Image (cartoon, rainbow, N blue to C red; front, side):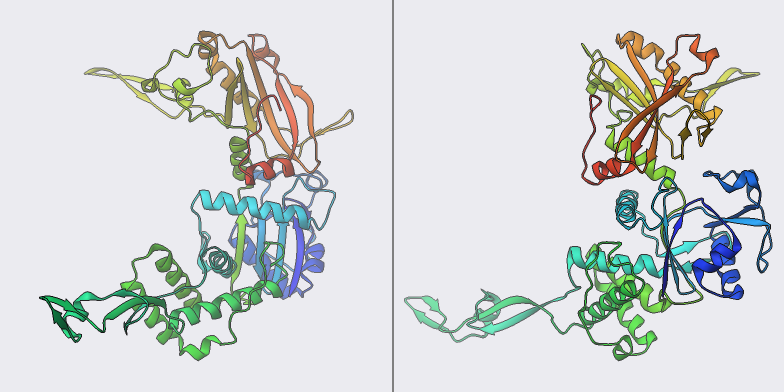
Length: 476
């Protein structure tokens, strides 16, 4: 199986993809078509302006027919994670990684971050959804089986065993009704008693089936060179093939019956996953299936990471904020509630009526030591040198960041918060934190608002803190 690294949002030519996929035009065209269908691959014009871009504007995307040896377009992967298609595994790493074309160590960390993000969002992608179809996602299911096995062990059912004079607790109902009884001074004595205990059913159909599925999933990920990338140890539990459990309909029938009598949540979920695995017969080599593990919105992952690591106070009640002589009570709401909502005012024959609508929501706001910092997590590839400026946030981001500060103006004045700072937080592949200047908007600067500082921060550092549940304090 072919396993290759791809950089997110890099512009690839048709021939470059052909070398990566190591296939003929027919298979490549089929792969491109499927990836486009699921919104993973986008097509943009083959122009000088496009070549070095690290962002993707909707107006640049073209709906183009797939032709052999296409010289008129670039192909762009709008995804971070793992894709398996037509027997090819693509490991798509984030766009800010530029120095290493095979960033295995960084990719392992990124996948752990995506996994934690998905678990917090309670996302299990058993099926892929596109605008046109839904298909089984074998990669996500294999990962589920292996992670669940290492966390919870094998599926097991317990059996109640009755014994005579065994080591378990005495089964008094059966002992009184059926055992030989001696009476002495009006008291019954039982020379022999019945006992009961619970043991795991080592020969359970479902336990054996689970062993086989876990083994198959481990072998598939090993063949795809993905076990180490996901930090999973190869697992070999069974030599039994799925066919030995019976035909597909029989296995599904047994699973369905077990689901109907199983009320343990973990076991029921596991049975449903086994049902999906058996019913779809998918493998990572299957030509008809596309398997994926990752996200088309890594910017949301970056925002979540920054909010968590930088100790976002937006959802903290005002009464719990570290303010001098805090005057608030719980009924005053949270910090997010300080920002007023737009009011739509109209009149009819019964008088004036008002509707409030959604308002500004900063990514992260932190209060500490008489200071307020407003962070905006920007997933950009920013470059700012004497000769060049590219990958910078647009005017909408700049004006919104100023408006956040303005929205908090009365709150900061009321609480005598004199130190207010605004930051764009942008990921880099370096190991450092670099304060790379600032952006100013004179017409807003003139009304007393602060410049927006640019902080280029190590993504590895932020991800490590996110995975370790560590908070970076303002003074750090």
